[in-house]
Length: 164
Ligand code: ADP
Ligand code: MG
Image 1: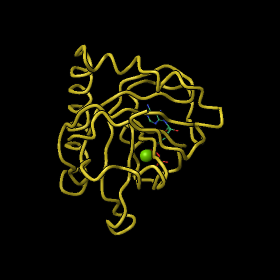
Image 2: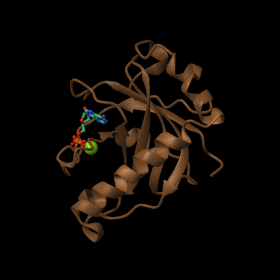
Image 3: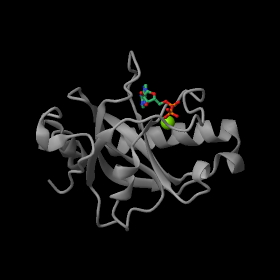
Image 4: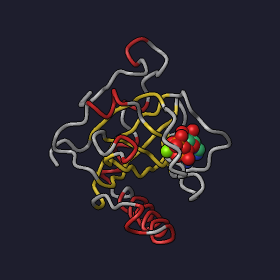
């Protein structure tokens, strides 16, 4: 995918109560404005990369890009699971991510069942952790993109920064 690495940021919005948290794997959702800017060659599926909430630390992440059943699969969603334990939810804060690599195509919850889904995601998390240790990927963790002050006027919640 020629658009990788892909940088973007946006406000964390409420999802559709698909119960990610109950699975032990909360996913922070981006608003439509961010999803609509995705380049055409970024297909649905599971990605890994780096993520940062507000001006916090940069953590490893896995992201699911999928057709949203809530909208009868006419809209895509981008959901990021940050591989870090947070003390509190961070709805309304700015999430900055860089998508670095692709893991696998999307698989529906219904076709898999709960336990298989959880183990698939845990598998994705392990793969993400491993791949992100490669020097060329570690480099992106230090990118200036994550140092930008999220509170200034050039990085308001809906602005997409790519290629910076
Ligand atoms: P929703 O349907 O609103 O997206 P989830 O059950 O997927 O609900 O939970 C997502 C929320 O959990 C995020 O918006 C964020 O505020 C919070 N959260 C806490 N820890 C994490 C994490 N490690 N990764 C992603 N979101 C997290
Ligand atoms: Mg979610």
